[in-house]
Length: 413
Image: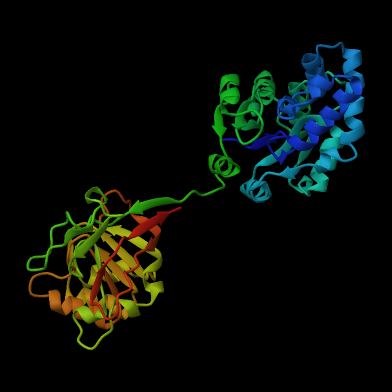
């Protein structure tokens, strides 16, 4: 959507509030406005807008007196103020990702050019920007739009048709107003000094709360999405002949006990569960000895229906998949189970309560489990699309048990 990004500096790239507010406080005190200098929090209104105009408005003074205040401000800021500053968490990681994606990057700040250069150089951020533009101290009434226009010319996006490919990114209404005046979109960053309400009211097309969210919006950061693919234990029908789970209160606060505590009774294969080799293979180990890496890691989710035979399984595992979850009502054959064993599969998961069909259940289980393949049964994959995910399906740590209920989770990036 966008080809070029214009960043504000204060409140967007760096948390500069401390240095700015303390330097304004210093200036106000030298000017004799002690009462206006008491509350540093109130002085955060100076972060972002042009300093001269903000001083005139805040102190209700003429331009000549405000110019004297700007000079006082720089006495402190140019020496110590700009060191009272730090890049926001995530900015150092975001900028190279944006460059790698192909964006043109620029800084468009109302801060004087020399200060902008000094701050970016001090924090070693300057290398990421194609253009760095601040205000000209010889023209104290430069607006944000004036700075943006110069940056657009230097970037090569000055023509009207090219401006659609540029977005301003800033934390104050002045950034939004400046962008609008230059016929640009503006993304507001609420982690700075303006806040969501100010930015939305000014007309920002999008307001993000964190640097990470900004990266997501610009297409360079990935956000994890979690899929709970297990069934609720007590409401899940049991496999015919298996014991049903139950729960009995032991301690109850409502009856005067100090806490609630419950006695649980369930079969090792109730609900969404994991089969250990011991389930169908006498002398094999239980769930406590299953290598954890078999139950954790990258997996593939595919959709299928009916019986999966030898050829179908060979096609599914041709890409080297080590963990396979099958969405749909399916059954494996002894031949397709043998393909899984020969392919060195770590884990296979299904939505049904068993992987084998009538008459072949024992053979299918024995083939898979003797090859140390973990079997997950009773999954819920209806809302999960086909693709690659990170799977976590760890069993309870119970010595020698043939199976264990699990709470399986797919993590999608």
